[in-house]
Amino acid sequence: MQGISLENVSVGFGGVKALSGATLGVEAGEQLAVIGASGAGKSTLFRALNRSVALGGGRVAVGGHDLYALPRRRLNELRRRIGTIYQAYNLVPQLPAGVNVSLGEVGGMGGLGTLRTFLAGPGAGLSKKVGAALEEVGLGGKAGVRTADLSGGQQQRVAVARLLVQRPDFILADEPFAAVDPVTTERVLQTLLHLNREGATLLVNLHDVEIARRFPRIVALREGSVAFDGPPERLTEDALAEIYAGDSSATADEEAFDLSELRRGLERSMRLTEGRDGVSSH
Ligand SMILES: Nc1ncnc2c1ncn2[C@@H]1O[C@H](COP(=O)(O)OP(=O)(O)OP(=O)(O)O)[C@@H](O)[C@H]1O
Ligand SMILES: [Mg+2]
Image (cartoon, helix red, strand yellow):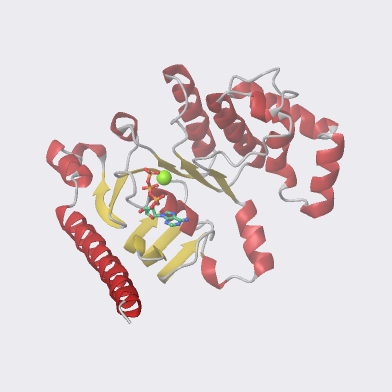
């Protein structure tokens, strides 16, 4: 099986460059921690890997497929092999937790199957899988609870349980430890590593550098491009300071932008005032 590659990928949102010439290759079955300051482009990188953002430039390949060149149907097939835990979990809050977990499987069944699961709850075989998955993440007995009534960390674990049912080839976990206590963090990490040992390529985006150091490879993003790529031994204090340093040039640019906007605004209102004065003096 083939892994993941990004070549010179850029993604912009209006004037903001979220990714800027990001290049990265990940072998199938690898474990990778992605770190970087808030706003560095980590979530955008993951979104580029399941084609949920438009590319400004570059190329993204997943499992040997040119992701952005795939026709819709093939894209959907590939997406079924990609399991994502979003920073905001991406669960349906009104549904019972168990139904959210079962969506890991019915995601591949098309509209009617999904609808049936919504209406009737998962079938017996699937129910067993769902129960085991919830058990594994420490939520045994919560299958029938409305997802919105679970705590943030519990909802995050529902998203992990959904991966256990989906068994994706590629896992993109965007801050899966953000809302959970240390014991749960360990449990979620072990679950993700377990899926990785069974063959899934695992990319985890996290803020906790100590947890990142437990991964054999760490990639750091800074201002939308890869600023570090190597084993934890090479992630020195100096490298970390560089990765998380505030960027003074960006700040200067923002100030210049704000000032010129302000100046334009002031000029506009002054012209209006002058015009009004002109009218009133006649
Ligand atoms: N949908 C969007 N619309 C406009 N700007 C966006 C959007 N998504 C991201 N951005 C901007 O792109 C940049 C990168 O955002 P991204 O979410 O990838 O950062 P991140 O590294 O995941 O940060 P965090 O650690 O805070 O989650 C930021 O400046 C952000 O404001
Ligand atoms: Mg993010």
